Amino acid sequence: MKRFLDVLLSLLAIIFLSPLMLVICLIIICDDGMPVIFRQDRVGRGDKLFKIKKFRTMKNGAPNLSTADFEESDEYITRSGKFLRRTSLDELPQLINIIKGEMSIVGPRPERPIYADEYSRMVKNYDVRYLVKAGLTGYAQIYGRYNTKVSDKVLLDSIYIYTFSAWLDIKLIVLTIMIMF
Image 1 (cartoon, one colour):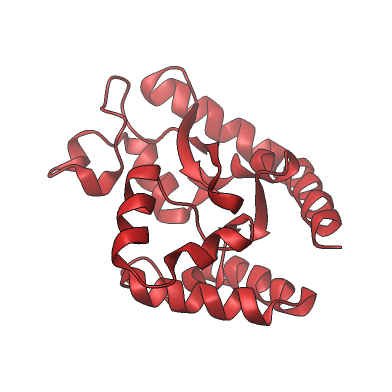
Image 2: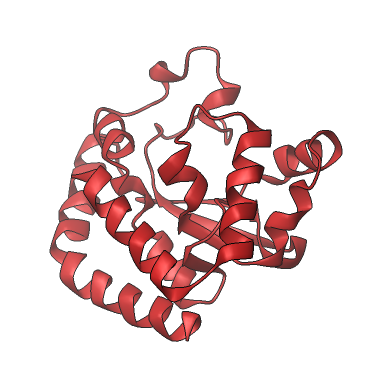
């Protein structure tokens, strides 16, 4: 049932949001050229790697690192990228990851392998996150946001994993939309 809803809602979102996604592509091209999609390794269900897709927010030629790895990341972020990140619109291409079965709409956010390895060693029960598919949004994103400690995110992700229901997914999707707007 979860997979069916993931595919159905992702297809509907792509259809409904395709004009917006086209505009975003054109803005990125005008702002900093091609490519418009950024791909990066992330760790998903079963501790398996996949390529996450996002709209590119960093300038061409910027190192392939996360924003946290830069001392002054603002110099690498494009004008359109600042807006896309602030509104989370840079995440929309992950709808393709969901259709491909690499992600789910709701689940723990996937980490880069270097961080996942570090957190697995440092944070108790970190690997419980690999029991389910990584998500576009998740319990930790709604109730913890981005400045939450990794150990607290693991706790929040664990709550989601062990109390999962279709209604919880629907609630988290609605809360995500409300937070975005």
